Image (cartoon, rainbow, N blue to C red; front, top):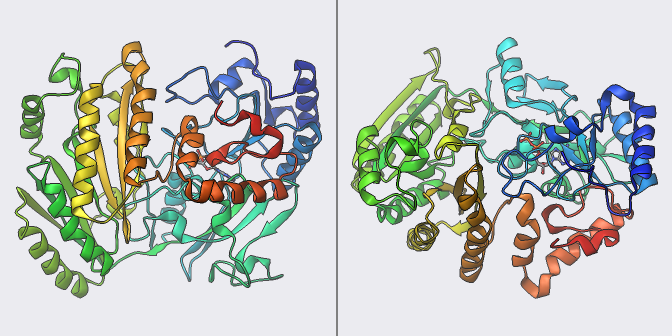
Length: 520
Ligand code: ADP
Protein backbone atom coordinates (compact mmCIF):
# COMPACT_ATOMS: atom_id res chain seq x y z
CA UNK A 1 0.00 0.00 0.00
CA UNK A 2 1.11 3.59 -0.63
CA UNK A 3 1.93 6.15 2.09
CA UNK A 4 -0.21 6.16 5.21
CA UNK A 5 -3.10 8.56 4.56
CA UNK A 6 -3.06 11.27 7.21
CA UNK A 7 -6.10 12.99 8.69
CA UNK A 8 -6.37 16.70 7.74
CA UNK A 9 -3.82 18.75 9.71
CA UNK A 10 -1.78 15.72 10.80
CA UNK A 11 1.91 14.87 10.43
CA UNK A 12 3.12 11.26 10.60
CA UNK A 13 4.58 12.12 14.00
CA UNK A 14 1.29 13.39 15.39
CA UNK A 15 -0.52 10.29 14.11
CA UNK A 16 2.07 8.14 15.84
CA UNK A 17 1.45 10.00 19.11
CA UNK A 18 -2.29 9.36 18.77
CA UNK A 19 -1.60 5.68 18.06
CA UNK A 20 0.47 5.40 21.23
CA UNK A 21 -2.25 7.15 23.22
CA UNK A 22 -4.74 4.55 21.93
CA UNK A 23 -2.36 1.74 22.89
CA UNK A 24 -2.03 3.15 26.40
CA UNK A 25 -5.78 2.84 27.01
CA UNK A 26 -6.65 -0.22 24.89
CA UNK A 27 -3.44 -2.24 24.83
CA UNK A 28 -1.53 -2.88 21.59
CA UNK A 29 -3.75 -5.86 20.65
CA UNK A 30 -6.73 -3.57 19.90
CA UNK A 31 -4.82 -0.96 17.86
CA UNK A 32 -4.15 -1.53 14.15
CA UNK A 33 -1.87 0.81 12.23
CA UNK A 34 0.19 -1.54 10.00
CA UNK A 35 -0.14 -1.50 6.21
CA UNK A 36 -1.87 -4.86 6.26
CA UNK A 37 -4.36 -3.59 8.87
CA UNK A 38 -5.17 -0.57 6.73
CA UNK A 39 -5.66 -2.76 3.66
CA UNK A 40 -8.13 -4.95 5.51
CA UNK A 41 -10.32 -1.92 6.28
CA UNK A 42 -10.57 -0.76 2.63
CA UNK A 43 -13.88 -0.85 0.74
CA UNK A 44 -13.78 -4.16 -1.16
CA UNK A 45 -16.45 -2.96 -3.62
CA UNK A 46 -14.85 0.46 -4.19
CA UNK A 47 -15.36 2.04 -7.60
CA UNK A 48 -12.32 4.23 -6.94
CA UNK A 49 -9.65 2.22 -5.11
CA UNK A 50 -7.69 5.36 -4.25
CA UNK A 51 -10.41 6.91 -2.08
CA UNK A 52 -11.48 6.40 1.55
CA UNK A 53 -8.25 4.95 2.93
CA UNK A 54 -8.14 4.88 6.75
CA UNK A 55 -5.05 5.81 8.79
CA UNK A 56 -5.64 2.79 11.00
CA UNK A 57 -8.22 1.23 13.26
CA UNK A 58 -8.96 0.74 16.94
CA UNK A 59 -11.23 -1.94 18.37
CA UNK A 60 -12.46 -1.17 21.90
CA UNK A 61 -14.57 -3.89 23.51
CA UNK A 62 -16.24 -2.00 26.39
CA UNK A 63 -18.18 1.25 26.66
CA UNK A 64 -15.43 2.67 28.89
CA UNK A 65 -12.88 1.90 26.19
CA UNK A 66 -15.08 3.58 23.55
CA UNK A 67 -15.23 6.66 25.80
CA UNK A 68 -11.44 6.60 26.24
CA UNK A 69 -11.00 6.46 22.44
CA UNK A 70 -13.38 9.40 21.99
CA UNK A 71 -11.43 11.41 24.56
CA UNK A 72 -8.16 10.86 22.68
CA UNK A 73 -9.83 11.70 19.35
CA UNK A 74 -10.98 15.02 20.84
CA UNK A 75 -7.50 15.76 22.18
CA UNK A 76 -5.85 15.15 18.82
CA UNK A 77 -8.75 16.33 16.57
CA UNK A 78 -8.65 12.89 14.97
CA UNK A 79 -11.69 11.76 12.94
CA UNK A 80 -13.20 8.39 13.93
CA UNK A 81 -15.41 6.24 11.67
CA UNK A 82 -17.59 3.82 13.69
CA UNK A 83 -18.55 0.47 12.20
CA UNK A 84 -20.34 -2.48 13.74
CA UNK A 85 -19.24 -5.37 11.54
CA UNK A 86 -18.45 -3.29 8.45
CA UNK A 87 -20.30 -5.54 5.99
CA UNK A 88 -22.23 -2.65 4.47
CA UNK A 89 -20.98 -3.77 1.05
CA UNK A 90 -22.02 -1.53 -1.81
CA UNK A 91 -22.17 1.45 0.54
CA UNK A 92 -18.54 1.56 1.70
CA UNK A 93 -18.03 -1.56 3.84
CA UNK A 94 -15.42 -0.91 6.52
CA UNK A 95 -13.97 2.23 4.89
CA UNK A 96 -14.35 5.76 6.26
CA UNK A 97 -15.64 8.61 4.13
CA UNK A 98 -12.76 10.97 4.93
CA UNK A 99 -9.30 9.54 4.09
CA UNK A 100 -7.05 9.40 7.15
CA UNK A 101 -9.92 8.74 9.58
CA UNK A 102 -9.41 6.00 12.15
CA UNK A 103 -11.92 3.17 11.89
CA UNK A 104 -13.66 2.54 15.22
CA UNK A 105 -14.25 -1.17 14.88
CA UNK A 106 -16.93 -2.30 17.35
CA UNK A 107 -17.18 -5.86 16.07
CA UNK A 108 -15.68 -7.24 19.29
CA UNK A 109 -18.67 -6.05 21.37
CA UNK A 110 -20.99 -9.02 21.11
CA UNK A 111 -23.31 -9.16 24.13
CA UNK A 112 -26.90 -10.29 23.65
CA UNK A 113 -29.60 -9.75 26.32
CA UNK A 114 -32.87 -11.45 25.42
CA UNK A 115 -36.26 -10.96 27.04
CA UNK A 116 -37.99 -14.27 26.36
CA UNK A 117 -41.36 -13.11 27.63
CA UNK A 118 -41.70 -10.18 25.25
CA UNK A 119 -39.37 -11.09 22.39
CA UNK A 120 -37.14 -8.08 22.73
CA UNK A 121 -33.38 -8.08 22.56
CA UNK A 122 -30.57 -5.69 23.41
CA UNK A 123 -27.57 -6.18 21.16
CA UNK A 124 -24.11 -4.71 21.12
CA UNK A 125 -22.63 -3.58 17.78
CA UNK A 126 -20.69 -6.76 16.98
CA UNK A 127 -23.72 -9.06 17.14
CA UNK A 128 -24.22 -10.41 13.62
CA UNK A 129 -27.46 -11.88 12.26
CA UNK A 130 -25.81 -15.31 12.41
CA UNK A 131 -24.89 -14.76 16.10
CA UNK A 132 -28.44 -13.78 17.05
CA UNK A 133 -29.90 -16.63 14.98
CA UNK A 134 -27.59 -19.12 16.73
CA UNK A 135 -28.55 -17.66 20.12
CA UNK A 136 -32.26 -18.06 19.35
CA UNK A 137 -31.77 -21.66 18.20
CA UNK A 138 -29.54 -22.56 21.11
CA UNK A 139 -32.11 -21.27 23.61
CA UNK A 140 -35.04 -22.62 21.61
CA UNK A 141 -36.79 -19.24 21.55
CA UNK A 142 -40.03 -18.81 19.54
CA UNK A 143 -38.96 -15.65 17.68
CA UNK A 144 -37.88 -14.96 14.09
CA UNK A 145 -35.37 -12.46 12.76
CA UNK A 146 -35.80 -10.30 9.69
CA UNK A 147 -32.55 -10.92 7.85
CA UNK A 148 -31.29 -8.86 4.90
CA UNK A 149 -30.07 -10.37 1.61
CA UNK A 150 -26.51 -10.20 2.91
CA UNK A 151 -26.85 -11.32 6.52
CA UNK A 152 -23.11 -11.34 7.11
CA UNK A 153 -23.31 -7.95 8.83
CA UNK A 154 -24.57 -6.82 12.19
CA UNK A 155 -28.11 -6.43 13.46
CA UNK A 156 -27.25 -2.91 14.64
CA UNK A 157 -25.41 -1.69 11.52
CA UNK A 158 -28.30 -2.85 9.34
CA UNK A 159 -30.92 -1.02 11.42
CA UNK A 160 -28.70 2.09 11.65
CA UNK A 161 -28.37 2.26 7.86
CA UNK A 162 -32.06 1.47 7.25
CA UNK A 163 -31.45 -1.96 5.76
CA UNK A 164 -34.49 -4.12 5.13
CA UNK A 165 -35.43 -7.77 5.60
CA UNK A 166 -38.25 -9.96 4.29
CA UNK A 167 -40.69 -10.50 7.17
CA UNK A 168 -43.34 -8.14 8.62
CA UNK A 169 -40.52 -6.75 10.81
CA UNK A 170 -38.55 -6.09 7.64
CA UNK A 171 -37.88 -2.38 8.08
CA UNK A 172 -35.42 -3.09 10.89
CA UNK A 173 -34.98 0.58 11.78
CA UNK A 174 -38.68 0.66 12.77
CA UNK A 175 -38.09 -2.15 15.29
CA UNK A 176 -35.45 -0.19 17.22
CA UNK A 177 -36.58 0.40 20.81
CA UNK A 178 -34.06 2.27 22.93
CA UNK A 179 -30.38 3.04 22.27
CA UNK A 180 -27.32 3.55 24.41
CA UNK A 181 -24.99 6.06 22.78
CA UNK A 182 -21.55 7.54 23.42
CA UNK A 183 -21.83 11.16 22.29
CA UNK A 184 -18.90 12.84 20.51
CA UNK A 185 -17.98 14.60 23.79
CA UNK A 186 -17.71 11.21 25.52
CA UNK A 187 -20.96 11.43 27.47
CA UNK A 188 -23.06 8.25 27.69
CA UNK A 189 -26.82 8.60 27.10
CA UNK A 190 -29.76 6.19 26.92
CA UNK A 191 -32.82 7.07 24.84
CA UNK A 192 -36.53 6.42 25.42
CA UNK A 193 -37.41 4.71 28.72
CA UNK A 194 -33.69 3.95 29.17
CA UNK A 195 -33.32 7.53 30.42
CA UNK A 196 -35.37 6.56 33.50
CA UNK A 197 -33.02 5.40 36.24
CA UNK A 198 -33.72 1.73 36.95
CA UNK A 199 -36.09 1.48 33.98
CA UNK A 200 -37.56 -1.96 33.31
CA UNK A 201 -39.54 -0.77 30.29
CA UNK A 202 -36.61 0.28 28.05
CA UNK A 203 -37.58 -2.17 25.30
CA UNK A 204 -41.34 -1.84 25.89
CA UNK A 205 -41.92 1.74 24.76
CA UNK A 206 -39.68 3.47 22.24
CA UNK A 207 -40.58 7.10 22.89
CA UNK A 208 -39.99 7.80 26.60
CA UNK A 209 -40.87 11.28 27.77
CA UNK A 210 -40.20 14.33 25.64
CA UNK A 211 -38.49 14.16 22.23
CA UNK A 212 -37.70 10.67 20.86
CA UNK A 213 -34.09 10.48 19.73
CA UNK A 214 -33.63 6.95 18.34
CA UNK A 215 -33.85 8.02 14.70
CA UNK A 216 -31.40 10.85 15.34
CA UNK A 217 -28.62 8.26 15.52
CA UNK A 218 -29.72 6.50 12.30
CA UNK A 219 -27.73 7.41 9.13
CA UNK A 220 -26.15 10.23 11.13
CA UNK A 221 -22.79 11.11 12.68
CA UNK A 222 -24.16 12.32 16.00
CA UNK A 223 -23.15 9.41 18.26
CA UNK A 224 -21.61 5.96 18.65
CA UNK A 225 -24.29 3.43 19.45
CA UNK A 226 -23.11 0.87 22.01
CA UNK A 227 -26.43 -0.92 22.69
CA UNK A 228 -29.60 -1.21 20.65
CA UNK A 229 -32.95 -2.53 21.81
CA UNK A 230 -35.06 -4.26 19.21
CA UNK A 231 -38.40 -6.04 18.86
CA UNK A 232 -38.49 -9.48 17.25
CA UNK A 233 -41.43 -11.17 15.55
CA UNK A 234 -43.07 -14.00 17.52
CA UNK A 235 -42.84 -17.25 15.59
CA UNK A 236 -46.04 -17.40 13.53
CA UNK A 237 -48.42 -20.33 13.60
CA UNK A 238 -48.49 -20.34 9.82
CA UNK A 239 -46.63 -18.92 6.84
CA UNK A 240 -48.43 -18.92 3.50
CA UNK A 241 -47.92 -17.20 0.23
CA UNK A 242 -46.92 -17.41 -3.38
CA UNK A 243 -44.08 -16.69 -5.75
CA UNK A 244 -45.47 -14.96 -8.82
CA UNK A 245 -43.80 -14.38 -12.20
CA UNK A 246 -44.82 -11.85 -14.87
CA UNK A 247 -43.83 -11.94 -18.51
CA UNK A 248 -43.41 -8.35 -19.68
CA UNK A 249 -41.54 -5.27 -18.45
CA UNK A 250 -44.76 -3.23 -18.62
CA UNK A 251 -46.45 -5.64 -16.14
CA UNK A 252 -44.67 -3.64 -13.44
CA UNK A 253 -47.51 -1.10 -13.46
CA UNK A 254 -50.24 -3.65 -12.71
CA UNK A 255 -48.08 -5.39 -10.09
CA UNK A 256 -47.51 -2.19 -8.13
CA UNK A 257 -51.15 -1.17 -8.40
CA UNK A 258 -52.39 -4.60 -7.27
CA UNK A 259 -49.97 -5.10 -4.37
CA UNK A 260 -49.87 -1.50 -3.09
CA UNK A 261 -53.48 -1.37 -1.79
CA UNK A 262 -53.07 -4.76 -0.04
CA UNK A 263 -49.98 -3.43 1.67
CA UNK A 264 -51.61 -0.16 2.69
CA UNK A 265 -54.65 -2.05 3.98
CA UNK A 266 -52.24 -4.39 5.87
CA UNK A 267 -53.69 -7.54 4.32
CA UNK A 268 -49.99 -7.93 3.50
CA UNK A 269 -47.81 -6.97 6.44
CA UNK A 270 -44.41 -7.90 5.01
CA UNK A 271 -42.72 -5.78 2.37
CA UNK A 272 -42.70 -7.62 -0.97
CA UNK A 273 -39.98 -6.74 -3.43
CA UNK A 274 -40.55 -6.95 -7.18
CA UNK A 275 -37.29 -7.92 -8.87
CA UNK A 276 -36.30 -8.39 -12.49
CA UNK A 277 -35.00 -11.57 -14.09
CA UNK A 278 -31.34 -10.68 -13.43
CA UNK A 279 -31.89 -10.49 -9.67
CA UNK A 280 -32.93 -14.15 -9.82
CA UNK A 281 -30.44 -15.25 -12.51
CA UNK A 282 -27.22 -13.51 -11.42
CA UNK A 283 -26.98 -15.72 -8.33
CA UNK A 284 -27.13 -18.95 -10.34
CA UNK A 285 -25.35 -18.22 -13.61
CA UNK A 286 -22.65 -16.03 -15.10
CA UNK A 287 -22.85 -13.73 -18.07
CA UNK A 288 -20.12 -15.50 -20.07
CA UNK A 289 -22.25 -18.66 -20.10
CA UNK A 290 -24.67 -16.77 -22.37
CA UNK A 291 -22.76 -14.28 -24.48
CA UNK A 292 -19.37 -12.69 -25.04
CA UNK A 293 -20.82 -9.48 -26.49
CA UNK A 294 -20.13 -6.28 -24.54
CA UNK A 295 -22.90 -3.73 -23.94
CA UNK A 296 -26.28 -4.32 -22.35
CA UNK A 297 -27.72 -7.80 -22.97
CA UNK A 298 -29.98 -8.16 -26.00
CA UNK A 299 -33.63 -9.24 -25.66
CA UNK A 300 -32.75 -12.61 -27.26
CA UNK A 301 -30.23 -13.44 -24.57
CA UNK A 302 -32.61 -12.26 -21.83
CA UNK A 303 -35.32 -14.51 -23.25
CA UNK A 304 -32.94 -17.50 -23.34
CA UNK A 305 -31.89 -16.99 -19.72
CA UNK A 306 -35.49 -16.59 -18.56
CA UNK A 307 -36.50 -19.73 -20.42
CA UNK A 308 -33.74 -21.81 -18.88
CA UNK A 309 -34.71 -20.81 -15.33
CA UNK A 310 -38.45 -20.47 -16.04
CA UNK A 311 -38.60 -16.95 -14.61
CA UNK A 312 -40.56 -13.88 -15.60
CA UNK A 313 -39.25 -10.47 -16.59
CA UNK A 314 -40.38 -9.58 -13.07
CA UNK A 315 -40.96 -11.82 -10.06
CA UNK A 316 -42.40 -11.12 -6.63
CA UNK A 317 -42.91 -13.20 -3.50
CA UNK A 318 -45.89 -12.47 -1.28
CA UNK A 319 -46.07 -13.93 2.23
CA UNK A 320 -48.66 -14.00 5.01
CA UNK A 321 -47.64 -14.51 8.64
CA UNK A 322 -49.72 -15.35 11.69
CA UNK A 323 -52.74 -17.48 12.54
CA UNK A 324 -53.53 -20.19 10.02
CA UNK A 325 -57.23 -19.34 9.75
CA UNK A 326 -56.45 -15.69 9.08
CA UNK A 327 -53.76 -16.57 6.54
CA UNK A 328 -56.09 -18.94 4.68
CA UNK A 329 -58.67 -16.18 4.34
CA UNK A 330 -56.09 -13.60 3.26
CA UNK A 331 -54.51 -16.04 0.79
CA UNK A 332 -57.72 -16.06 -1.26
CA UNK A 333 -57.56 -12.28 -1.50
CA UNK A 334 -53.94 -12.38 -2.69
CA UNK A 335 -54.67 -15.16 -5.17
CA UNK A 336 -57.51 -13.22 -6.75
CA UNK A 337 -55.51 -9.97 -6.86
CA UNK A 338 -52.65 -11.73 -8.66
CA UNK A 339 -54.81 -13.86 -11.02
CA UNK A 340 -56.68 -10.73 -12.09
CA UNK A 341 -53.51 -9.22 -13.53
CA UNK A 342 -52.55 -12.35 -15.48
CA UNK A 343 -49.21 -13.63 -14.22
CA UNK A 344 -47.30 -16.25 -16.22
CA UNK A 345 -46.90 -18.40 -13.10
CA UNK A 346 -48.16 -18.63 -9.51
CA UNK A 347 -46.31 -21.00 -7.19
CA UNK A 348 -48.07 -21.37 -3.83
CA UNK A 349 -46.24 -22.16 -0.60
CA UNK A 350 -47.51 -23.05 2.88
CA UNK A 351 -45.96 -23.96 6.23
CA UNK A 352 -47.40 -24.56 9.68
CA UNK A 353 -45.62 -24.67 13.01
CA UNK A 354 -44.09 -28.07 13.65
CA UNK A 355 -43.21 -28.74 10.00
CA UNK A 356 -39.59 -28.45 8.84
CA UNK A 357 -38.88 -24.83 8.00
CA UNK A 358 -37.39 -23.66 4.72
CA UNK A 359 -34.12 -21.81 5.19
CA UNK A 360 -34.81 -18.50 3.51
CA UNK A 361 -35.32 -14.82 4.16
CA UNK A 362 -39.06 -15.53 4.52
CA UNK A 363 -38.36 -17.54 7.68
CA UNK A 364 -35.73 -15.08 8.93
CA UNK A 365 -32.77 -17.35 8.21
CA UNK A 366 -29.47 -15.53 7.71
CA UNK A 367 -28.00 -15.97 4.22
CA UNK A 368 -25.25 -14.67 1.99
CA UNK A 369 -25.98 -16.32 -1.38
CA UNK A 370 -27.61 -13.18 -2.94
CA UNK A 371 -24.11 -11.67 -2.89
CA UNK A 372 -23.20 -14.28 -5.49
CA UNK A 373 -24.53 -11.75 -8.04
CA UNK A 374 -21.18 -9.93 -7.96
CA UNK A 375 -19.73 -12.80 -10.00
CA UNK A 376 -22.05 -11.99 -12.91
CA UNK A 377 -19.34 -10.34 -15.04
CA UNK A 378 -16.45 -12.45 -13.69
CA UNK A 379 -13.25 -10.86 -12.38
CA UNK A 380 -13.22 -9.17 -9.00
CA UNK A 381 -16.89 -8.35 -8.68
CA UNK A 382 -18.62 -5.60 -6.78
CA UNK A 383 -21.69 -3.43 -6.91
CA UNK A 384 -23.16 -0.17 -5.79
CA UNK A 385 -26.84 0.63 -5.54
CA UNK A 386 -28.81 3.55 -6.89
CA UNK A 387 -31.95 3.61 -4.75
CA UNK A 388 -34.50 6.39 -5.12
CA UNK A 389 -37.72 6.42 -3.10
CA UNK A 390 -40.83 6.39 -5.32
CA UNK A 391 -44.51 6.77 -4.53
CA UNK A 392 -46.47 3.49 -4.49
CA UNK A 393 -47.96 4.16 -7.91
CA UNK A 394 -47.76 1.79 -10.88
CA UNK A 395 -47.61 4.43 -13.61
CA UNK A 396 -44.86 6.35 -11.88
CA UNK A 397 -42.90 3.17 -11.10
CA UNK A 398 -43.09 2.08 -14.75
CA UNK A 399 -42.02 5.51 -15.99
CA UNK A 400 -39.05 5.50 -13.62
CA UNK A 401 -38.13 1.97 -14.72
CA UNK A 402 -38.30 2.95 -18.41
CA UNK A 403 -36.02 5.94 -17.84
CA UNK A 404 -33.53 3.89 -15.81
CA UNK A 405 -33.51 0.91 -18.19
CA UNK A 406 -32.87 3.21 -21.14
CA UNK A 407 -29.87 4.63 -19.26
CA UNK A 408 -28.51 1.13 -18.52
CA UNK A 409 -28.69 0.35 -22.24
CA UNK A 410 -27.12 3.67 -23.18
CA UNK A 411 -24.17 3.00 -20.80
CA UNK A 412 -23.95 -0.65 -21.89
CA UNK A 413 -24.69 -2.14 -18.46
CA UNK A 414 -26.93 -5.09 -17.54
CA UNK A 415 -29.99 -3.98 -15.57
CA UNK A 416 -30.72 -5.42 -12.14
CA UNK A 417 -33.61 -3.60 -10.53
CA UNK A 418 -36.12 -4.08 -7.77
CA UNK A 419 -39.06 -2.25 -6.28
CA UNK A 420 -39.53 -2.98 -2.56
CA UNK A 421 -42.80 -2.00 -0.91
CA UNK A 422 -42.86 0.01 2.29
CA UNK A 423 -46.25 1.02 3.63
CA UNK A 424 -46.62 4.07 1.38
CA UNK A 425 -43.41 4.08 -0.67
CA UNK A 426 -41.32 1.93 -3.00
CA UNK A 427 -37.56 1.66 -2.63
CA UNK A 428 -36.31 1.29 -6.19
CA UNK A 429 -32.95 -0.43 -5.76
CA UNK A 430 -30.95 -0.50 -8.99
CA UNK A 431 -27.84 -2.61 -8.51
CA UNK A 432 -24.88 -1.65 -10.64
CA UNK A 433 -22.88 -4.85 -10.80
CA UNK A 434 -19.31 -4.45 -12.06
CA UNK A 435 -16.05 -6.22 -12.66
CA UNK A 436 -13.23 -4.36 -10.95
CA UNK A 437 -10.76 -5.99 -13.37
CA UNK A 438 -12.42 -4.34 -16.37
CA UNK A 439 -11.00 -0.76 -16.52
CA UNK A 440 -13.30 0.25 -19.38
CA UNK A 441 -16.37 -0.73 -17.37
CA UNK A 442 -15.05 0.82 -14.16
CA UNK A 443 -14.45 4.16 -15.87
CA UNK A 444 -18.18 4.35 -16.70
CA UNK A 445 -19.63 3.66 -13.25
CA UNK A 446 -19.17 7.11 -11.75
CA UNK A 447 -20.61 9.19 -14.62
CA UNK A 448 -23.41 6.64 -15.07
CA UNK A 449 -24.32 6.87 -11.38
CA UNK A 450 -24.30 10.66 -11.44
CA UNK A 451 -26.58 10.63 -14.49
CA UNK A 452 -29.11 8.49 -12.64
CA UNK A 453 -29.07 10.77 -9.59
CA UNK A 454 -29.70 13.75 -11.86
CA UNK A 455 -32.51 12.02 -13.76
CA UNK A 456 -34.26 11.08 -10.51
CA UNK A 457 -33.81 14.54 -9.04
CA UNK A 458 -35.53 16.03 -12.09
CA UNK A 459 -38.54 13.81 -11.27
CA UNK A 460 -38.53 14.80 -7.58
CA UNK A 461 -37.06 11.49 -6.35
CA UNK A 462 -34.30 11.29 -3.73
CA UNK A 463 -32.20 8.31 -2.62
CA UNK A 464 -32.76 6.54 0.72
CA UNK A 465 -29.14 5.44 1.19
CA UNK A 466 -25.95 5.75 -0.76
CA UNK A 467 -22.27 4.85 -1.07
CA UNK A 468 -19.60 7.04 0.59
CA UNK A 469 -18.63 8.49 -2.81
CA UNK A 470 -22.07 10.01 -3.28
CA UNK A 471 -23.10 11.21 0.18
CA UNK A 472 -22.44 14.88 -0.64
CA UNK A 473 -24.07 14.53 -4.04
CA UNK A 474 -27.24 12.96 -2.63
CA UNK A 475 -27.40 15.30 0.39
CA UNK A 476 -27.31 18.20 -2.06
CA UNK A 477 -30.39 16.92 -3.86
CA UNK A 478 -32.35 17.34 -0.60
CA UNK A 479 -32.39 21.02 -1.41
CA UNK A 480 -35.79 22.35 -0.26
CA UNK A 481 -35.58 25.93 1.07
CA UNK A 482 -32.01 26.27 -0.07
CA UNK A 483 -30.82 23.16 1.80
CA UNK A 484 -32.51 23.92 5.15
CA UNK A 485 -32.30 20.27 6.27
CA UNK A 486 -28.54 20.11 5.83
CA UNK A 487 -28.21 23.39 7.76
CA UNK A 488 -30.24 21.88 10.62
CA UNK A 489 -28.13 18.69 10.52
CA UNK A 490 -24.92 20.72 10.67
CA UNK A 491 -26.18 22.97 13.48
CA UNK A 492 -26.86 19.82 15.52
CA UNK A 493 -23.50 18.39 14.44
CA UNK A 494 -21.56 21.42 15.64
CA UNK A 495 -23.47 21.49 18.95
CA UNK A 496 -22.80 17.82 19.70
CA UNK A 497 -19.38 17.47 18.11
CA UNK A 498 -17.59 20.84 18.28
CA UNK A 499 -14.22 19.24 17.43
CA UNK A 500 -15.70 17.43 14.43
CA UNK A 501 -14.27 14.02 15.35
CA UNK A 502 -17.15 11.69 14.51
CA UNK A 503 -17.62 10.38 10.95
CA UNK A 504 -17.11 13.73 9.21
CA UNK A 505 -19.05 13.90 5.95
CA UNK A 506 -21.41 11.02 6.69
CA UNK A 507 -24.78 11.63 4.99
CA UNK A 508 -23.35 14.95 3.72
CA UNK A 509 -23.05 16.30 7.29
CA UNK A 510 -19.73 18.11 7.82
CA UNK A 511 -18.51 19.69 11.05
CA UNK A 512 -17.47 23.34 10.91
CA UNK A 513 -13.78 22.44 11.22
CA UNK A 514 -13.81 20.28 8.06
CA UNK A 515 -16.36 22.04 5.84
CA UNK A 516 -13.65 22.53 3.21
CA UNK A 517 -13.63 18.75 2.62
CA UNK A 518 -17.23 18.76 1.31
CA UNK A 519 -17.45 17.40 -2.22
CA UNK A 520 -13.72 16.49 -2.32
P1 ADP B 1 -23.00 -4.10 8.97
O1 ADP B 1 -21.77 -4.75 9.47
O2 ADP B 1 -24.20 -4.50 9.72
O3 ADP B 1 -23.19 -4.27 7.50
P2 ADP B 1 -21.72 -1.58 9.25
O4 ADP B 1 -20.87 -1.84 10.43
O5 ADP B 1 -21.05 -1.62 7.92
O6 ADP B 1 -22.95 -2.54 9.24
O7 ADP B 1 -22.42 -0.18 9.45
C1 ADP B 1 -23.38 0.35 8.58
C2 ADP B 1 -23.42 1.86 8.75
O8 ADP B 1 -23.87 2.21 10.06
C3 ADP B 1 -22.08 2.52 8.59
O9 ADP B 1 -22.28 3.69 7.85
C4 ADP B 1 -21.62 2.86 9.98
O10 ADP B 1 -20.88 4.04 10.01
C5 ADP B 1 -22.91 3.00 10.75
N1 ADP B 1 -22.72 2.40 12.08
C6 ADP B 1 -22.50 1.10 12.30
N2 ADP B 1 -22.39 0.85 13.59
C7 ADP B 1 -22.52 2.02 14.25
C8 ADP B 1 -22.50 2.38 15.62
N3 ADP B 1 -22.34 1.46 16.55
N4 ADP B 1 -22.69 3.68 15.92
C9 ADP B 1 -22.89 4.60 14.96
N5 ADP B 1 -22.92 4.30 13.64
C10 ADP B 1 -22.73 3.03 13.28
